[in-house]
Structures are given as structure tokens and as C-alpha cells.
Length: 240
Image (tube, rainbow, N blue to C red; front, side):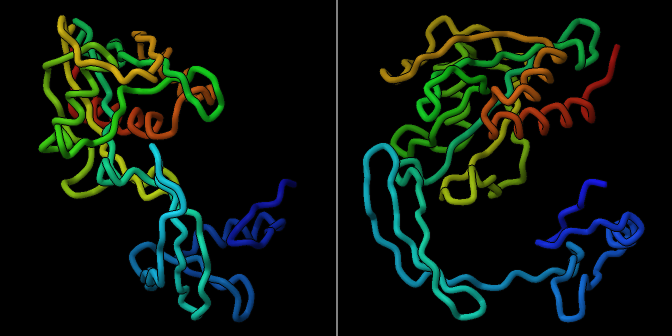
């Protein structure tokens, strides 16, 4: 039997595992860790003791010292984009089908050079918030839709509540806001791309999109936004 990993312990007894997951809060061992219910969990504080910049170019690298609830202080490497106010936007451009069934529609994706692995990867139109150009995150989403996907217009819907951002990864200060753009059209005068960007624009159906999402060839913020966008479409569209 494959062990089930729960809070650092391996549970190999299936009956115990079943009882564990059915119980909202349960001690694994006397005095040991607990599985907490989300409606009872409380967040401890993690005060930042100090932080200084170690390197700054496109990304900024910080050395951050954080005090844990037990009093110990730990150092971390943190990265982010301070010039973007540590925020970027990801947009799902959706083109509905005549049937009215969202699963018959299509989505515009981009294939972009990913410098970390030196390969092309799939993603949705994505870009950093620029406080010198954008007044809102919607402005940022529209700009990237034009620059990367060569699209404009349609209806732009934010897929998260106001003021909420999704952490990019746990060691990064950046957060992103996901959007869906309904029925965008071709932009005959698209925004100018950055010189270091290499981008191919592709259009896929929903079945192809799901295969790409499962392939490991799509960036995580885009995978996440795709799931939210499809959930939005399933709840807000009806077949004719």
C-alpha cells in the first residue's frame, strides 16, 4: 500500500487514514501535530526582523530575517519586482462558440520563451503592473492582452475579489490578479512588446487547452487562471 503523507508523518493503515480525513481535527500522536479545520485555524505572527537588498536588476533579491512563533529567527532569500508594486495580471481570452456552450469555445494562448529553462512554454497573456502607465489592474490586463495576444475589447471580468492577490510562489513577493476577457477582437494596432520577449500566438479549443494544462508545459499562474476562468464560464453561461 502506498503510504499517505500527513503533516510529516506516514500513515500506512487505510482505516486510520480514512478516520483521519473524516475528522476535522485530530491528534496523530499524543502531543503531536494536528490536522486543523479551516474555520478554527488561527494564523500566528511572523514579524520581519530585518530586510536588505542583495541584488537588483529586473528582479530584486532580498535577504529577509523572520522571527517564528517559537522565537527563533530564520533568514530567507526573497525575490520580487518592486517597480511593478510586486503585482502582475494574467488574462484568459475567451472566444465563445455559436452554440452558446462554453466548452465549444476557444482560447487564445501565447507560447513564450521562458529564460529559466530556456524553452518555449504556454501561458496566458501575462504582464507586470506598471504604476507609471496603469491606473488599475484592469489597465494592466488590457495592455498585456494587446501586446502579447494582439487582442482588444470585449468584457473584462476579475476572477478574484477586490484587493486579493495570488502569491506567485512562496519565496516571492509578487502576487497576481486573474481576469477573463470575453469576446475580445483583433487589435489592428497592438501595443509594443518588450525587446527581450519572444512570443507566438496560438488559438486552441477547450479540449486542447485541458491537455496543455496537464502537460507540464504551461506556467503555474496561467494554469490557475485557466481553472478559475473555466469555473466562471461553467457558472455563468448557458447553451442556446
